[in-house]
Amino acid sequence: MRLTKLTALFSSLCLFFLISSCDRDTNLDNSNVSRAKGLQMSSSQEVPGNSSMGTGSIDATYDKGSKTLTYSFSWSGLNGPAVAANVHGPASRGTVALPPPLGRYTNGIAQTLWSPSAAKGTAGSYSGSLFVDGVVIKEADILAGKMYINIVTPANPTGEIRGQIEF
Image 1 (cartoon, rainbow, N blue to C red):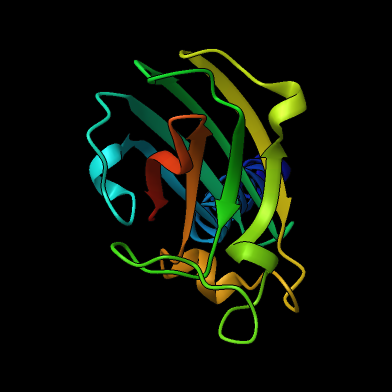
Image 2 (cartoon, rainbow, N blue to C red):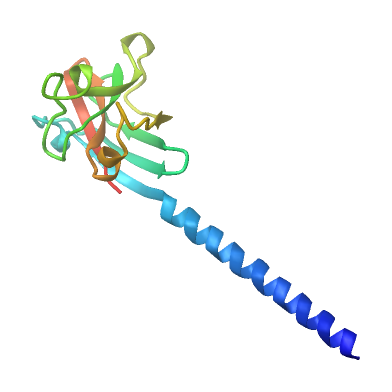
């Protein structure tokens, strides 16, 4: 009888620790991952703005553990084919990413997603990732919403639509 009670007590304690450790893992994962869904891309976010009726949407995730920004975006209604897309920064909403010596990246571009030789259509989608090395690409810029994606067309060579990556 006493052995049965000790076995039951031991089993209950093991189950309690197993369940409580799973909760901690979940909380740790949630605090290390930032997600944003449905971030809007539009011509009015471009600097300067333009009259395009094109629109788009960005979903982004930043994982502090792996230091990786992953993103997917879609667009439609562009004035012409999407001849380039880039991740720019650092720049707050309403400002443009500057090249050196004022900015960090050539032409303010942190990552080229595609170039004119790989043009896409007036509607489409794209997914990619960006490693945050802490030297060139900085976590503080990502988390402060200072990176953006824009899509370039022949009619708008500096960008037809833009979406700020904000968590």
